[in-house]
Image (cartoon, rainbow, N blue to C red; front, side, top):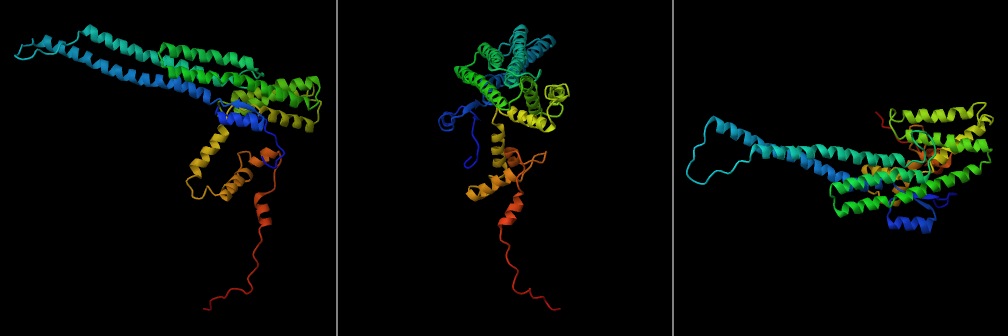
Length: 363
């Protein structure tokens, strides 16, 4: 960020104390928790142990069925031919058919019960991710921090109740508490984003109907399109349809933004798209690039050389493009920069022509 006219307003990361202290004391910015670590802790605490328990229950069903089959074979053998007592140690007592059948039924019931419990835990974890959004994905309305907490906390309570029924260890409940401590920070992040968006919209100097349209419809529609871009075409279709329905009537002649010029309308659309991106609930884009570099480039020699890292960063920011043809630098600065290779060619001195032409072989 050195030399750039930029200001850091927030940082999205995990709850490492060093990162939190750096953001608070050095950057003076807001810290937004990474949503990934909440489902991760819940999954490690309950979902993963229950999956292991389900695999053990499936194995126990097979193991319990073997004594029952031996008992049935023994009964058939006794009925067909009476057993003759031979000298020596008496044979091992065979369990009764009723006892073997009860053991099989008990293990089968345990095996059938666990999938329902696991599915309930999975649904609660997915509900947490669905609730932590700046805009309601089903209705297209803005959400506040208290409403999000009221949706997330019951899901954690449900997972805790299941953990208590399963008799989980104290380490499990420590992970649950660790995930629960992030919930107030989620509420603070929603309040921070709402305040920042409100401040930026006020600077646009819009009328009351226009300002209401920005907050209630244009910004939510941009957020829905942003979420739809992270889904498949089929999964994101409902979000795109809802976003289009929210935005269409705004720019009609009788709409609140219809009296504006085309240039002003495009400016408001760009501002709405920019404000919709203020809410950052995950650092997956950074982690994804780190993973990509680790998988593609870290096996190459010389990556620790500063000049090579600078070259790779320049290639990533100014040359590589997305599907829409934009580079990272163009998205960051809001305009298309000069051609990187044209700048390189302009700064490189072309070597002069040789003094004499090369000799040709005479046939």
